[in-house]
Image (cartoon, rainbow, N blue to C red; front, side, top):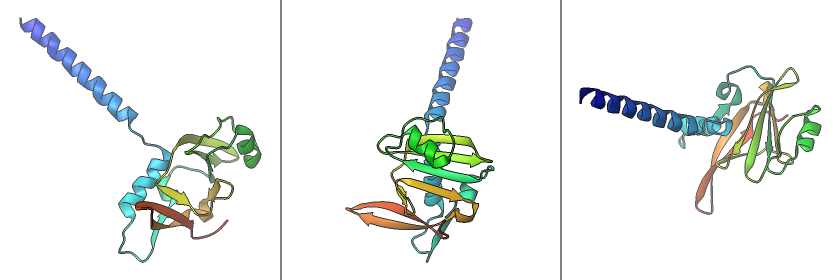
Length: 156
C-alpha cells in the first residue's frame, strides 16, 4: 500500500509540474507586453509628463527597433529594411517588432497589440533608434475606453 501511495504522489507532483510549466510558458511575454507593463508600472495621472524609454524597456544591444503594423507583406518589410526580412505577412491587429543590430535582425516577434499607439507611425511603420527612443505617454479616453498614446520626444 505504501508503494502505491508513493507512486500516486510522484505522479501528482509530476502532473502539477507539467501544469505549472504550461501555464508559465503560455503566458504572453512579448515585446508589446513589455511596453504595456512599463506603462502600467510608471504612468501616473498626477505627473505633468510621463516618459518611457525603449532603451530601458529592451536593455539588450540593438541599433534600431522597427515596428510594422497590420497588413504588411514580407516584400514591403524587406523593401523598407533594405534587406530580406525572412518574415511572415502581418495580419489585422498584429504588430511585428524587429530589433536590428549591425544591419541584421537579432530579435523579432509578431503579436496583438491594442492598448497603445505610436503617434509617429507612418504608413503603419514605426522606426526607433537610440536617439529617438524616449516617448511621452498620454492616457486617452475614447468611446468610454482608455488607451495610451506614445509620442516621441525627438522626431526622426
